Amino acid sequence: MKNPAMAVGAAAPFTTVSSFSHFKTPTTRSRLHLPPPFINFRTPHQQNLRYLKSLHIIDSQTRFHSPDAIDQILTTVHFLKSKGFSDSDFPRLAFLCPQLFTPNFDPTDIAPVFHFLAADLSASVQESRGLILRCPRILLSDVELCLKPTHKFLKQLGIENLKSPSNLNSHLLNTRVEKLRSKIRFMQEIGFSHEEAAKICGRMPAMFGYSVEENLKPKYEYLVKEMERDLEELKGFPQYFGFSLEARIMPRHLHLKQRNLRIPLNRMLLWSDNRFYSKWK
Image (cartoon, rainbow, N blue to C red):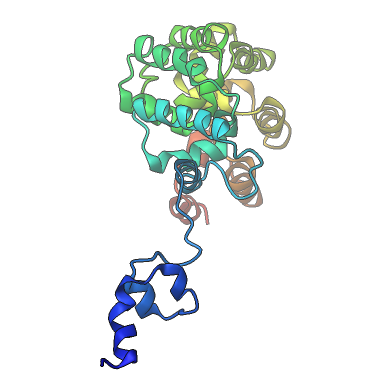
């Protein structure tokens, strides 16, 4: 007669799983091909969440995590990728223009901007991408009310190559004409003719990025009141407005004043620190 223990051992491979529920050893679980306990099988929705988090578009504090909301955001992501953007571009886009990645945003609303950049500016896909990355809010600008009138105005001033992706070009294109004109009006108010002001702004488009109250006006008042220089000297060197009042203009003026010296504006400001302070010890 066979040993009872051997009989049980022989029958073991055919025993049901439930009859071995009290065994917890890895050997038994592996032999029966059971999955580890508490496995969470990732769903497509969870994969989408993880992808958007990797792009810094959403985080753990984001309140909308419904599949429909996430799908709509992914639609925007796929649209932008079709326009030349890569995964590495999205953290910047999301940080500077979070409106693009909300559940109620429709990416077809920004299609006219891409058409404007390609058709009106003749910008390539990469040039358009570069302009947008430097000023993502340009995507939210109205083409007919802002972008086209601004482009026309800048071209009339002789400003060219606006398709080149630079911070200046991006922000110029995203500035309304009325705000651009305010800089020309300021120049007229201090004594320039309209033609002179327009020509200076055309040659120095960075002027359009300066605040009248916080930049241009204080520099002009310092020139006239403290430096005791006149408009004609400014007309000969309008680049004066491009220098920092606190870091360049004031220190150099005071340095010269202490030595009872007066030199042309261009020599005062264009020279490097080393050359200037070596010359005027």
